[in-house]
Length: 324
Image (cartoon, rainbow, N blue to C red):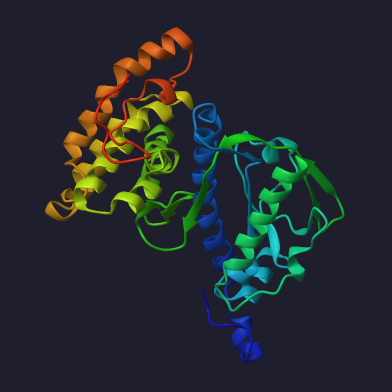
């Protein structure tokens, strides 16, 4: 982002290209929308099998305080305050209301005006996290939330159950990680260039798999030795086609993603200390497809809580027996 408006001369401020600023924000939001759409579809469709579910409405907020220069962001988006809609995930309760258009300004979240909360310095993310936590608390405690917009309209939204995981896009970097509660993907991750949604969804499904299988907590217990990391990575790979199938995607997209991404970005020995080779990973995903297709044909769903073979014992160490 450009230098802050504060301290600039009028002429310097006038030189800011707000068209370019809006385009940069829109590009970020387009990628975030794609991530939220896919993340919601996976989390909603697999809720019946996740060990922990939460009420969700598929709403992502934005806070101007999280931008490098909040004043420029406010002007570029035509906002008076700091909070607005970032995304409403496709098919989510928020999207289905039709009220949550991108960049629509928000002045109240169930009785609280988040603009009144103190913001830190530029690039402050804590206030936005607090707002999302507040939304989640209202959904849990009250079974819904009323959101009031700057034009005076209020929309009340009721949640549905989803797998317990947030999805976040980072404004820099090319990594994808999961920390037990969030899936975080850098805006530079190569899969954003993949036009086929099922193939992109495989990336998101891999990270979601880590969260729903409890991998971060398990590594905290047993240690993060390479052999343990390889085991949880293998297990996450194998769950990908299950998550995809339940969300309406072709489970074959898991192997397709790994072949496309791995053949170009597998970094050799360094990566293989923590993962199998990309070709082995693709084969492991493909090996799950027959049972998935059989279950989908018989039951209309792939119940991985019942039929997926674990690589680890979530309450202990490595799994000693395989179960189908």
